[in-house]
Image 1 (cartoon, rainbow, N blue to C red):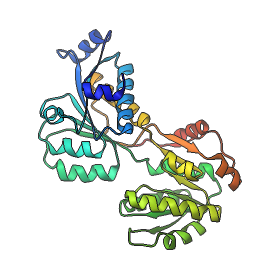
Image 2: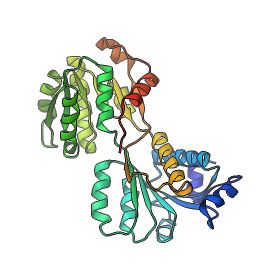
Image 3: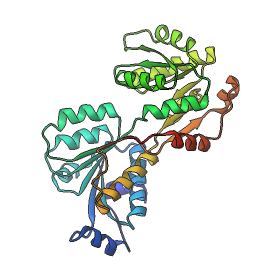
Image 4: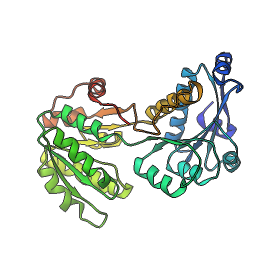
Amino acid sequence: MSFYQRVHQATRTLLSRGVLSFVCLLGHSAQAEVLLLLSSDAPYYGETADSLQTAAGEDSANALTFRVLTLQSPEADTALTQTWQLIVAIGSKATQQVLSEPGNSPVLSIFTPKNAFENIKVREDAGSPRSVSVIYLDQPLERVVNLATRLKPEIKQLGAVFGPISKTWEDELKSLTSQRAIALNSAHLTPEDNPVAVLRPLVKGSDLFIALPDHAPLNRAVAKWILHLSFQQKVPVIGFSKAYTNAGALASIYSSPEDIGRQAGQFIVARLIEGDTTLPQAQYPRYFTISTNFTVAGSLGIHLPPDNELYRSLEQQETTLP
C-alpha cells in the first residue's frame, strides 16, 4: 500500500506481539495514539512519515497507532480538536496550524528550519499549555565547519554570505572558525543587492565557501552565482542539498526525510513508551547525509574519502548537540 493510500485511509496501525509489553509500560493505556500531520502531500513529507513509522515500529515492538493526515485532508480540522498522546507536525505549515489551535496535546515539530520554528512558536504558541518539542531541519554549524576542515585541512580563509535569515548564525560561525584558527571571510546579501558584486570578492579571498540556507529566492541566486564563481576561481563549495552537489559543489551535508523520520521515531518511543522525560525540547538532527562530487574534487586536486568514511569522522568529532 502506497503512502498516498495510507493518507486517504488516514490511519496506520502498528500493533502486534508487543501489546503486552506496551501495556505493562503504559499502565492502563493499551496503545499510544499519535497524529502525524503533514504540511502537504509533497513526497518528502510522506517519506519522513514513512521513516518515522518504520523506526517507531521497530523500536517499540510495533505497539503504536498512527493516524496520518495532510493539512488539506477533510478530517484534519476535526483531528486537531481531539486529544492525542502526541501530535507530530511535519513541516512549517503543519507546525503553524497545530500551534494556532487550542488544545493540550503535546507537539513534536519536525522537518522545520530553526528560524521558521522560532517565529511560529513566538507568534502562535504564546501562553499555550502545550509541551512543544522540535527536531530542526538545519545542520548544526559545528558539523558544517568540521566537514570543511575535513575536506580541506589546510584551510585558512572560510567564505560565507549571510542573508536575512542566516545572519542570525554569524556570531556562532565566527566563534567556531576562531576556535580553529580560521579567518571568516563573510558579507551580507539582501534581495536588493547585486549577488555577483557581493560574492565575487568573497570567493576570491576564500579557501573554501559554505552555502547557508536562507529565503528561497536568495538561495537560488547564491547557488547560481557561487557555483559559477567558485568554478572560475577553483574554490570548493559545501552546499546543503543533494542538488547543490549535483550542480557543482564539492560536497553537501543535510538531513534527508529518512534521517529526520528515524530520529523522530526514536524520540516517540523514548517519550511515549520508555517514559523518558529528559529529552531536550529542541534538537538538531542526529542523523545526516553527505554527498560528494568526485568530478569536482578531481578538477580541484582534492582527495575525497568515501562518503561513509566522512560520516564516521564527523560523528567522532562532534560534541554533544542540543
